[in-house]
Amino acid sequence: TKPLLELEDIRKLYPVKKGLIIQKEVGTVRAVDGVSFQLMPGETLAVVGESGCGKSTTARLAMRLIEPTSGTIRYDGQDITKATRQDMRRLRRDMQIIFQDPYSSLNPRMTVEEIIAEPMVVHNVGDRASRRDRVRELLRLVDLAPYHADRYPHEFSGGQRQRIGIARALSVSPRLIVCDEPVSALDVSIQAQIVNLLKDLQKEFGLTYLFISHGLAVVKHVSDRVAVMYLGQIVEIADKKNLYDNPRHPYTQALLAAAPEPDPSRRTAMKSLGGDLPSPLNPPSGCRFHTRCPLAQERCRSEVPALREIEPGHRAACHFAESVPSFTRFRNGEGI
Ligand code: SF4
Ligand code: MG
Image (cartoon, rainbow, N blue to C red; front, side, top):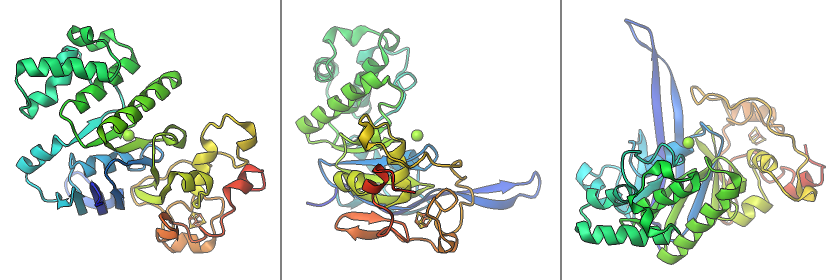
């Protein structure tokens, strides 16, 4: 099988200028800086990192909602990097997005029916009557009663609003859904319900998900593979099992340590990361993580680590990926 979505060396750079009359370029915000991955049909790839790491930008680049500075995007084998507006319009029916904030992503003046039917109207799917039926069918699919169709978003809870957002995304039968932190704004008790709903819908319709999240705990059950991003780059990518059981990048290990772990015997000894995320404007030299990495050596300041294969399907961008203390040792408190 061939990938449904493929990003090859994608960059999004913003030159930053200063000065009132004579503008001088003072640097470049490297929002996304050389990201590559493949997403297979029916698969869920999670992209995880702190806010500002470029994960949402990557998702928007993948859908060409924003234009990349360089690199190639392929959808279903077709290079869409230079696709025209018209071509993209057709493709967008196939790729839908679910947003983080169900409060602001639904128009308060539209009924639930109008909201869910909107993509069908935009893409000329069906007539009024068939759209009406489809909306009710979609409401049932996301476990909402059909009579909710005539209500307004403010009458619903956060979880219900996210169900409406999911129904809207599904309305035009897409193959790819970008889930941009779909549960981050919800109560923890509701998060699992929405994640489970997304999993059920994936099984039923063979959907492919690009799942954006700021934490590793949320995506543990929904993802097949996980990519960890730091300052605009993927620092580690692996099958879920390898990533959680044998993380090879110190940043991934730190994220795992920061994730709430219900079982105390599995909690890690590594303290949460020191320091703030550096600015993507003129990021640190060498390994971008060196300013916060507890294992940083002299070499890390000057030499950029390549994203290397550590084991089949598992790549990490650390000079010492093979010798970084294993997560098991972190768990037992023998770590850093
Ligand atoms: Fe840390 Fe050096 Fe590895 Fe970067 S290359 S993650 S600074 S040990
Ligand atoms: Mg975001």
